[in-house]
Length: 466
Length: 102
Image (cartoon, rainbow over all chains, first blue to last red; front, side, top):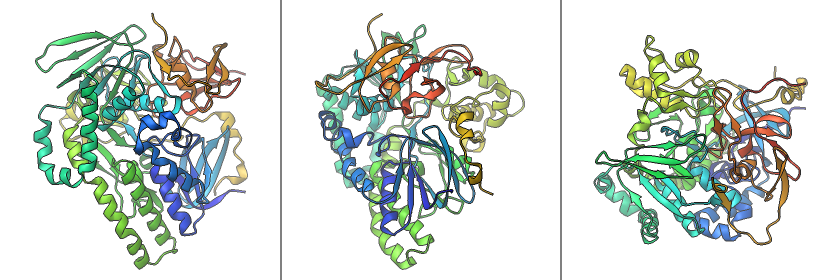
């Protein structure tokens, strides 16, 4: 028998958990599937087991804030299925997933995608060498394994996450070799137009300034205005080389280099479902087009959390709660008037949590060579194709991303373009002198996650939707 | 070359379990991922690529880069950042292209 639910939620982070709690309050049946072994998403990874420990202390109050929400989620009556990968969703809504080597399809009236964000793919020469990772990856290691780099670590990039991670690392007893700050000069000038928002959200701003103070006090070396850098080594990271604003180039030995240039919404599933998307110029990324309840252009498919646009954990919670109200309204569990009354204070909260976002976007644009990497930089990590290879292929007529994939195999590997999509679009936009929004991304095809023939063979054919 | 590039914070009395990487017994903590354990090894690479056989190690730790693929309990191309360690688990590094086996 195929399992049926009113709603299937993909993702058990702040948005997915909050939506599940809200939907259960309205009496809907809910299945929550998630890739991780425990609820929390990336921001609250392993929060239930780590929050009460010494590691929970050094990760900070915002991390520990996930614990009561995870508890409320556990108690809300939603069916929770961790360690599960969804690899296809079909109209009607049938959700295909793999758990413990077995394939299952479940049916739902509505699907809520709460799949969060990924770090913006920000290629540089040598970024595939062992020893190079993202800042987010290092923070996940700290959360789930209490694991830190053995030797002083290099951090390159900008945005709130590198600041937070460096502070957490210092508190954990780790050491920082240097911070290559890639944000352009003139931060105060860029922030000035947002002064009312800064004052309105002073609590958040002062937290960021506090992190900067903590780094300064600890004597962390900050190299400002780094426009480009590269990782060097034979089979593993051995050194890095960075360019100073005056054009001089500096080389330093390195064991671990952590890079970060902001977050982008995870749009892999919404793009596979061919939902409408819009280009966000300020954040240089795509996001699904949503109504006030988070419903996409495809009726019955909703998005909440950072997958709807980068906003952080509190905004994700608000969006999850709004989607829950909207879904209950559309399912006939709430009158329009009740839904409005319930949503008004949540909308108010969401506006507050999103208020600083334009200032953060202005402060921390991705470094320039992310949009225009050097010819020897690998763009497609899976198929090992460089920016030079893509530029060469771009000369054959005026190919779009799908033709580039056919010409070169860029995007054909296991990551399915999750790491190369934006870079290919940026290279094509420059080569053909078109706006990147017009170039678009490659088509996404199922299965969205690796699936073995053995797993597929476990699928009960009687459950096949007709 | 020096020791491993990542270390665990000391946790006196923390429970531990044993898995093998390419047949060598390795200690791990319950709840952590196979990718985290790989990163603590002298050779952090989990695989070499099918195209140029370049070494790759876990990179994103959240399931979107597919660089941490390895053979886990006989299943090739497993995303080790999404798999939690288990006692007796067999992890093998994955070299080059996959082939069909009986």
